[in-house]
Length: 594
Ligand SMILES: Cc1cc2nc3c(=O)[nH]c(=O)nc-3n(C[C@H](O)[C@H](O)[C@H](O)COP(=O)(O)O)c2cc1C
Ligand code: FES
Image (cartoon, protein in one colour):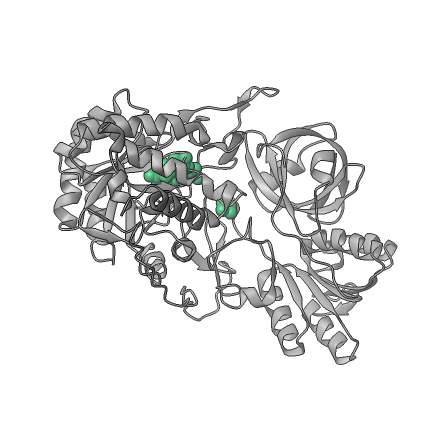
């Protein structure tokens, strides 16, 4: 795929399909040729928002069809567009359906028919026998009925009001089909989650392989932010299509998340009369290995190895658990504040050069009270847990700290430096920073507190010294660096943040971050935690030689995946062995001793 950034495409064709869905057709060769049924693209309505849309049709000559239902602000705005208008597209993203076997059943609910239309096109090309069961509220809500028929699928329809086909639920049609003892090799399904859940229950009994397309909040769309978490899977990358068995160990069908990451019922507007338990299915407890060459002690805490994820790469506890299982020696949470925050509209994350990104997530978080559930999940892995906290005032930060001190947290990291939110003010105000650090320290002692700084202030070393004087136990450097990427054709910001500002991360930061850590080591007495463009064991070695003791990995999780942790540990271990070091601690500050 080319750079992960929206590119403008003209709407080539617009067709009203039913009461709420229009099909938008584009000529988008670069996307269409890579698309698989089940994958999705991000659709950017410039200046409004960017939303995930399943691919309903893609042809080798570049035609891309997207069925957009008028269900929210952005989709409503898109519905007002005309042929020839410019829309941003990027993708395709995620996993697709694997079309195996001979007799395939597709179960669609509402606009869930869209990705199944594309799957049916492919299945028919492969000469499969396809039965499509499509359900909707009423006949006016049915989607792609003619297209399924024209493809030669055996289409059976259910409407809840009985206006067309079977009167009732599509899952009842499925039960009927199963009762007819017709053999099925595979079931593909997409639609409302409770319908999907029922399909999975029926198929588990019948032992028929089932693939499910799941919907969650999508922000970055490429595995960075964790907004789409489903039991430790990132729906944008590990999904949206899952084998039904994989979903059994998740909250699928029970609860989902708001934009803030807060857990909510699957149907928030429907009262079940029962209290919903927003718990995760407990994973196996994980105990890390303390590796002699890599184990590290910082601020009185023993780390199995010095590599962690960076703050912000995952709101959920289950994702942090996955990082630990993948090899992280400690895990760092999203920055958490007193109040729930949903963050900025999309686009929230773009790639401006290979492995160089700009994000404006806007610090989405569920608020410290709701975050307890995530900490409990993360703690299924027995690695040190660092809570990143944020706030604009002494009072706010103190409140967060007072609640958080009751949670099983090993260390705190105060985010003084998110460059594209109102919280950035703290690092520009040394007095305020001093008061906040002192207040947090007093509340959470004896737990250590690191302060995270950025180069967005003219003098990061001065800022770090201020934090040290205020009692900080460590300095984390660096946070993202201010940027305001603009779409050149429209001359408007690419990011959804109303100011257009975001923060650069990834390869952009590797060189500058190492230099800042070198300078900080000369000035500070307290340990340095390095973050910024760490992609390889060599980056860790460079940062360590410049003076860092712990290392946080952010953007590399997007391009390298979770294997980045084990890869770095392997590379580091080899380097230490070959060069005769007994422990990574011996590397720290070496560049200053030459
Ligand atoms: C999507 C995203 C979300 C982030 N969220 C936070 C956050 O909540 N708190 C924080 O202190 N830093 C946050 N950061 C900054 C990272 O923790 C890190 O400092 C920065 O990305 C540089 O590291 P990298 O080059 O390895 O990505 C975020 C960065 C990105 C890209
Ligand atoms: S939307 Fe999936 S990780 Fe960001």
